[in-house]
Length: 165
Image 1: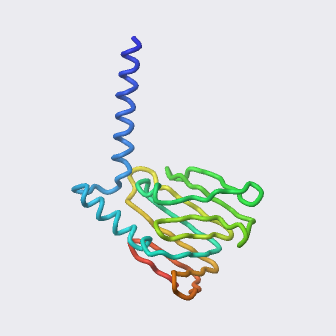
Image 2 (image 1 turned 90 degrees about the vertical axis):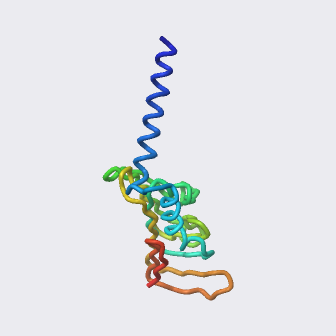
Image 3 (image 1 turned 180 degrees about the vertical axis):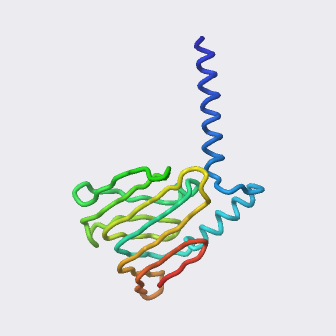
C-alpha cells in the first residue's frame, strides 16, 4: 500500500511539474533555440552596466525570468512588502520610508535599481506571453561607468529596448 501511495505521489508530482513548465512557456516556440533567442533579446538591454535611481519601479516578468531579478532585503522599520494574486499573477509591492539613505535595491542583469518610494514586481501566471519589462518613473537618474549622470522622467525597458524619456 505504501509503495502504491508513493508511486501515485511521484506520478502526480511529475504531472504537476510538466504542467508548470509547459504553462510558463507562454506562446509556443518551435524549439529550445527559439526560446533561448527570445530570452536573449529581452535580456539584452540589461547587459549594459548602469545604475538607476528612481521614485518608483514596476517590473513585469514571465516566470522564466524570476531568477534574473534580485529583490531587496528589507528593514521592517523602513520598508513594507505585501504579496497578492491578481488575475493569476503574483504581485509583490514594496514601499519605503528610507529615502536615499535606505532605498529598495533591485538588480536585473547588470542594471542596479535604487527605489526611493515604491516598487512592484508582477510575475505573470502560466499561459501568458514571455515578458521582461521594467519601468522606472518619477525623478529618475541613470549613470553608466565613466559617464555623466543623466536625468529622465521615465526609463522603460521592454521588448528588448532601452527607452528613456
